[in-house]
Length: 287
Image (cartoon, rainbow, N blue to C red; front, side, top):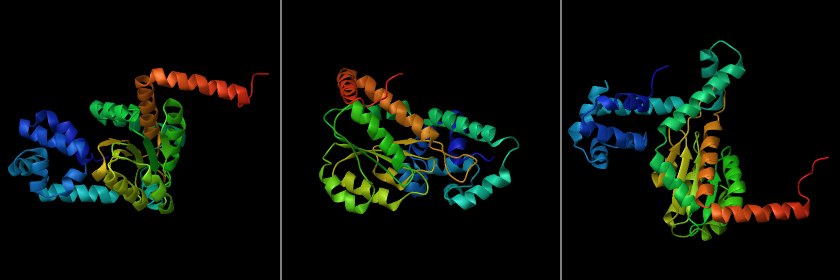
């Protein structure tokens, strides 16, 4: 399978000059958005010269920046396909063997790639924002990923107070946005095909001063333009639908990190919750 441009950059970064490494690191942090602007915009964002941008594109075998941009657009177009077209692609390329093995291999590869590409500093910054008791936490997602936001909220409500789910429907936005203040945190889940409702909600929350943490896929939701932190998960598997296993890994690891940062408060909340469950006989006891 042909490597993505992101993979090509990571593989070649050790052989680059200092300026080229600085440029490549900037592109990888904001991939693919960084490559969708002009040479001047990219050079300014990476704090390098325009010739450095052109030289790197040439060294990668694209002839120049225009060729690199065209390759990025082709890559994005090939990824942003509907479920039926995606299934046909997999059906044509499906390796031999049982679907359990094929699917498991793809998921394991997704987990490995996701972990290898997440910047520790970004992850730690996200955990610190979510653990800050002075900030209210909100979470939202799209048609499929809203379930991830609900899962996150259900657990985070135990870990700390002031955690709410935002439904990505326009008639629910105004009262919800009233509660979002400067410095509050909005955790957003958005993977292909990216939803306009999610983008609009993120835009309005960011306008009110929310710190946006985006969990997305390798091709990056447009909501990244408003995000302070972006964590990308690999989602492609031999199916008509993308896999959310790597996203689940990020979510559960984030919650573990927040729990560790807030343990004194969290342990007291968990103890009180267990007492309430016991009093309400919420769970069935052993026979």
